[in-house]
Length: 242
Image (cartoon, rainbow, N blue to C red):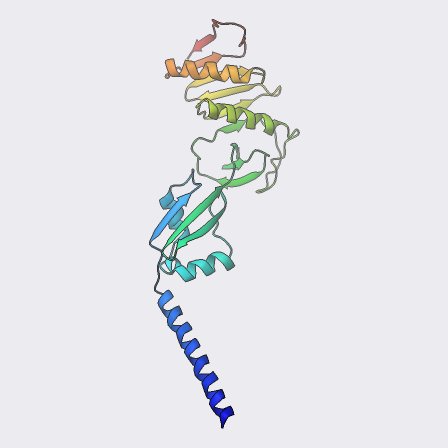
């Protein structure tokens, strides 16, 4: 008799637990994410990232979002390496975006093949990415996505990275960088061509260019900075107007 009462009591407790769990799950199923904060994004707006992650009505459900994020492959976003979803509360999340490092692109079979600092092709698209220059003058073979750009000397990517970083530091946005057979660089900014020559004293050359563009923003023609001499306090540069 005592055994039956004990069994009934255990069943009652188990039923109460299951009922509580069901009620909790039912209540949680109605909790929706209402506030989204996005960080780490530069190439996309917060609204664009949010619309990709929460692309369906159910995706804003807190439980569904958590399970989807933990146990399903993350959504593919061009130029984004990965992202993290951090729950700040049941109704508030932060999406931390880790963008791919892109330094330039080459034109290949009617597509723009963007590559990172190591020369790895990270994206193929017909979309022109703002602030990323086209690189010309490189000789390469067949291109494969997520593989290195097949050039003879991979050291050229270090030069491209250094140049693009110095351009960024000086606030200079270029449309195209051309490297000739001797690795001498030319910049194309609108209708202006800037001959930089070899990579010696590059920081000084770009500082001069920054100041020239500030004073003469509408230059059209060819500016020769390849004879830059950092010891010359009052330099003069040749300019051929278009």
